Image (cartoon, rainbow, N blue to C red; front, side, top):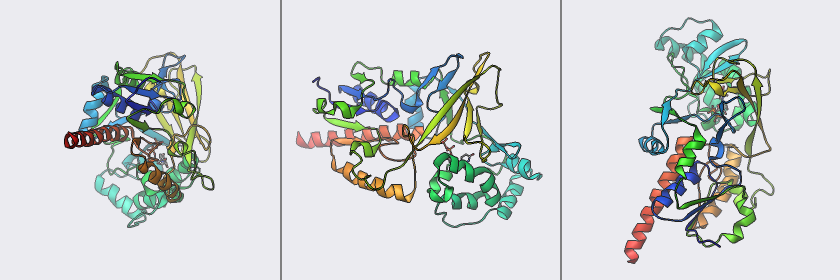
Length: 379
Ligand code: UDP
């Protein structure tokens, strides 16, 4: 067996960042990746219509973290992209997050100031002091009519659960705006990598100290790779422990069935992402990738997203029952001093991309500082 210092399972954000950090201090790193490509769920490629599309759904980078922004800028040029989402509700098209335009279009009101919007919300929302779940979070913010029209059924389609069965944090991802701001995010930095995410990750892991083994399931070969200093595991936490705490109650994940279609027209829809929060269709949203970076092509590619229970795990399902099961795995994970669990699936947390970058960078800093102190004391 070849000697490696750092063994990393998974070539997504967490795995790639840790590989780059350890390679930069002279460690020999091996990444073992189950899929036939790097970049995890950020993976994108040029499709048959000459359009850069993401295999696992649109990824919009946004952050307030200066350190993360500086880090990603070392590996790609980025162009500004302020993401917008519209939703088809009843037979109208409205911005999401809810803003002044959303309310005016849906209810025929004539709100034209922040003050009026606040008054409308005060009349319509159901104040709940400490929202205990997703339903209460939305009722508290925008009230029952918007809850029904824009959140209840979308959530059921996305999670196969109603908002009341999910943590408030899931629905709290979507704010309400008192003005006309129709951007999906309000972070300081909002941008997309020129040349795509796959290229960004190629640049992150491009280092003579980094070797990548694709198409390899770690659990098939783990006996061959035992002499490491540290192991970073970024896959589903329950898989690592052979699902031992899931015999009676399974830790839940949501997967997505991406159904792609070429349409022989310049554009199919007026925006990159159109949400369908109603029950009239089974998919949650349609993505038209051509809009990102204003790509040119005679045809267009659209992808409908249907979320499903089975398939590759993309989303942990944040609610008290899953938290309880996850806790058992977490306790077990903490006992393994040379194994670190990092990222969305290993931490069972609904991270955004920038949080995944930050966690990996912070973990490296913490571990390296600790190692240096131990070394100093020992020496
Ligand atoms: N959501 C909704 N209606 C929408 C958009 C979002 O009810 O039109 C809810 C839904 O439960 C979703 C959550 O808000 O899972 C978070 O949305 P986000 O866009 O952050 O989800 P992601 O892009 O990560 O799938």
